[in-house]
Length: 91
Image 1 (cartoon, helix red, strand yellow):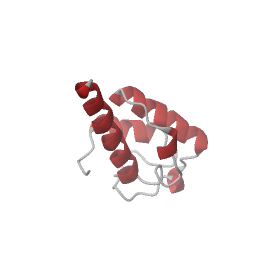
Image 2 (cartoon, one colour):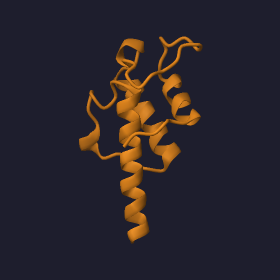
Image 3 (cartoon, rainbow, N blue to C red):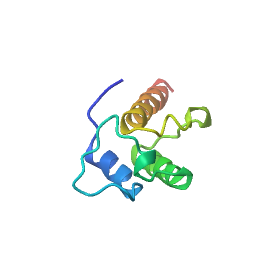
Image 4 (cartoon, rainbow, N blue to C red):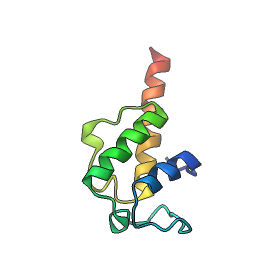
């Protein structure tokens, strides 16, 4: 599931990346750990994304690889969003 991410996604990422200069562009393959994403910031990012998309990301989907790149995080958000909103429509 691939889509172009939106400004709120980029903003949520930037808020948790202390080493990312404001003018630098995030690509799907940018290594977020090299830009200062640590475990505490990962949790803060997770909460921001869950709140922004009104989703609940299951614990078994939360891995270090999931948070390594913007592309992997965006795929996770889109997958969970589609699953949870489809389930709510089916209810």
